[in-house]
Image 1 (tube, rainbow over the protein chains, first blue to last red):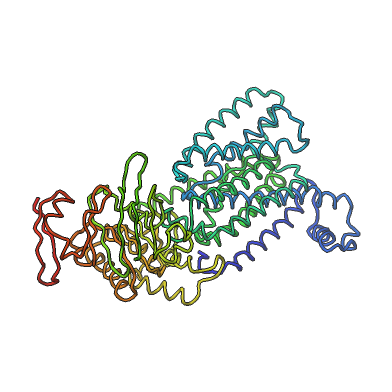
Image 2 (image 1 turned 135 degrees about the vertical axis):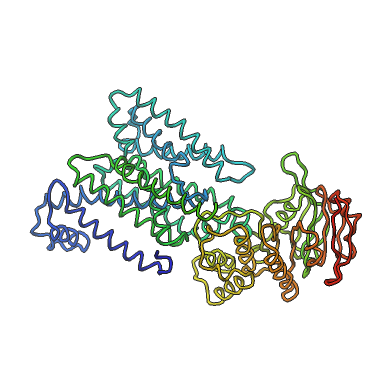
Length: 346
Length: 257
């Protein structure tokens, strides 16, 4: 659709939508805040001009800056990061339907978090769940890569198969933990369904650091990712060593997914759907796909989170919402794909 | 020497595929590698493209160890067209061919006008210019093969490694592709090493035939010296008659079984 268009107008357009959405989401919620008032608070904060918000109620200011904005930014960054992570997984595994879940990374993170929750470990203060989720994701990736490795290289089929097997084992583990945990049950379940409620500035900073670094790495290797989509042998003859690139990109994409899971719990379908849609719009070139996916993912998850936070009468876990909307939509795309492919005789 | 192999051995697990292979490949010639299935032809190409490395022995390119080049530098000297390629993402044909220019470009630079011209020329030479705006995922096997070949031409290397370049092509396009390959040899001094199954096409286009069996080189030389019923019998285990075709003045094989 926009394949022929240059990249920067697309990014500018998406950036404007995202900014508008951030402002709009800030006005919405239990306490209605005027549009102009929100702009004033932002102006005062960003430009350091206290007089813009001189007439604003300090409570309104606190609600917008310390309650809503951290959650809004967290939603946007998580959405964008999951989308990039998905785009990279799809590129590495040569499978347009892969995402962070395919490799069991998310299940690993969830398992780690469940353990932290049930054992009620207080070793690391408030970061317990996050750190356990993170370690769980990395250990899972290590196991999956160990299972899939043959003679120093990874075939995408092996990786996907190993991921599915490991994820199945971990899911059983999570069910067992849920069964064992009586008191912590609701905490675990809420977390497994994903939630962005009560995110703080420290969450935003953690997200910003890891997803910024990860996005940078992915973008730096985006051209190599293009070449890798021609297959390992051809990539090698074009100067890209897939057996070196694969681990780098797998670890980066998994880290990005793990950070998201550790902050917001499991939020499915964003990493799967967004790159898929972005690819239809802007084409498969990863140099365009990665930045476009980030902005689309940010817009999508922020919109979904705002709906569950401020529009619906009761807060639905965000992971449930994305799966309920994304799932059927995915089925539609998948079916359409099958049809167009059979038209072309394969 | 374009390539020189010195006592190269290679095994997949316990299965020895290349057995103590030593020979050199002259530059500026079209070499066709012939032999029965599983005799190590593709493995030979993989060794020459540094896709796999010998268990023992050494491969040299232009007098330097192949392993000393590094993937990116090697990609400016050697282009290869593999037998199997599956592109799962809807790149246009032009985008795929333009990937042949990557080894010559800096990481974030845009293609220059020269790059664009080289891509257009490669598409035209390989009879793929009318496919340029189509998606690679929507092409037939033969069309895809021409595109991948065009990608290798756009890479503008001094060596072209082709693994059954005509496997899924009709007669017209098979002749077209082999003509392009041999014109690269004549006009630019490119070295072509092609694994082929059609002995008659090989005899017609190649300057040098390399017969392989069970990981060893049996014989090599120009078709008029190397191609006869004895060697066909020895390599392929098939009875045949070799005659000189009058119109083209090249030896051609008729199989008897």
